[in-house]
Image 1 (cartoon, rainbow, N blue to C red):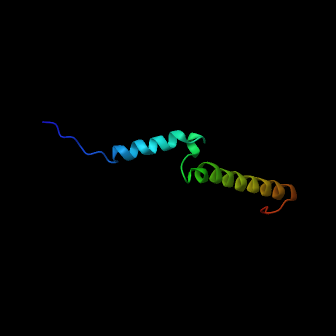
Image 2 (cartoon, rainbow, N blue to C red; image 1 turned 60 degrees about the vertical axis):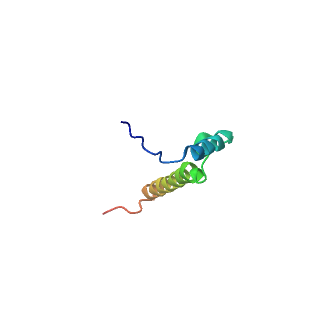
Length: 69
């Protein structure tokens, strides 16, 4: 006796989504609606913030600002 579990997502919808993603000409990691935010905007924001903090640290070190006496 074999019990088959119902699929989580209907097969027709899955095939429809697969065909939609296969037709797109963008890169695979940018195909979703909000994927550009997670793979482009967030890393750019982190890089910008870190460059700002590095620059501020170099400026403070070169001018002797923030030293403990």
